[in-house]
Length: 313
Image 1 (tube, rainbow, N blue to C red):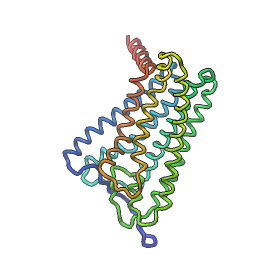
Image 2 (image 1 turned 90 degrees about the horizontal axis):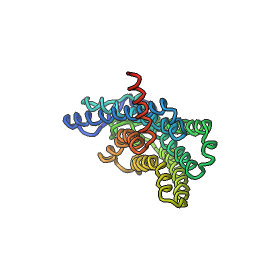
Image 3 (image 1 turned 45 degrees about the horizontal axis):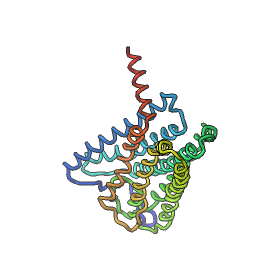
Image 4 (image 1 turned 135 degrees about the vertical axis):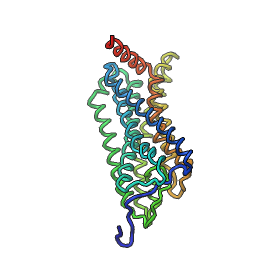
């Protein structure tokens, strides 16, 4: 349609990773396996936390929320990617593009805010253990999770609205594997100053502020651990934070590379792979990190399996 000689498109074409059919077939198998592992791993975490009363603790409440986010985040992009691996022309409608952009931004933002809430939980557990149970009650945990979800959704709604309103004057080929903010903004044929301001503000809200909160929490945690006199005590205190710190480091590293690029930088194949790692691989690794490095999760899995085998007898 046309309005004041500016064109809004009904669909876009995604360039994807490769036009070679054999490479696309291999990528289909690879990312199909990654997607299944992501669903199974995060689904198992949600199931274990729901079934085992010993895991009904603040740390696992936030972990359950994180697992839901990971399932949603990978589901917002990977299924469409798998379909496009099988198609010659990789088209996506305007509505589907906007929907994908909204959910990817909302879930990505919510994840970083949840990681900040989990850092606060670890801060209370290590630095003020006597007040931990009272301070991290169900009401506060629900409030922290609700704020994370609401801010993530609101931030995404604003960024999606100002991105999808841009006319492209006939430019319809998106140099990316999915509908991504910077790739869509580059198609615009009008001034994008507002979009650049919104992107910066969004990065501050869902990246910089949570990163500062996480850093502040861990500065206090490290200081508290260093005051512990015994090596065993230090190791135990650090062990309660190791899994979360690993996920935080991996998530923020990927996000900074993916979202903090200058607007003038052309997307390269490497940029696309980084985005795919963030959307596809990171959600798969999160449950592995928490399950392999968490004795309580492994013990809960053993108890659930034992109860299941006893029920069959």
